[in-house]
Image (cartoon, rainbow, N blue to C red; front, top):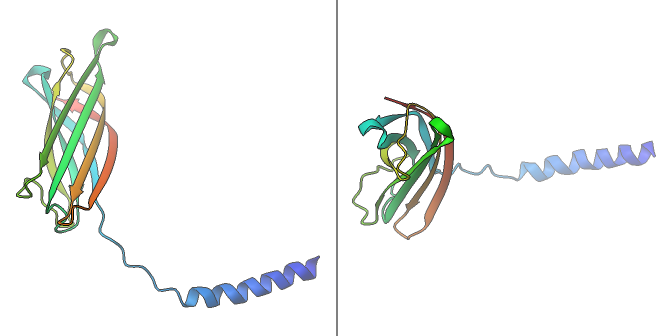
Length: 151
């Protein structure tokens, strides 16, 4: 049994290095990323919240459009939930985002949709970012975070 195990290991250590020596390292592809900033700001006494989304995208990837949307849910007094959504998009490609493989921040305004105002505190934020290149090949990113809403 030990001989068989030793021979198997000997064969594997001989074959694996030969197989890996021919491998060519892959070039890292530019990626699309998005994440919320750590805090958001109340607008008009809680009617809305402005939250920053930090994003990156490869150069030219916004040639045929982009879309970014966010939702925020916050538990406020009495067990009630303040909820709202906000979005921005540009399907003309002349845009409000910059795709150059560096990080940029895009402010999104989220308006309370349930008649319950947002308050100072913590909330759950969810987001979606889609960016499309000149060939209409699109990349989608879903992201979420616990954020702090401040005045």
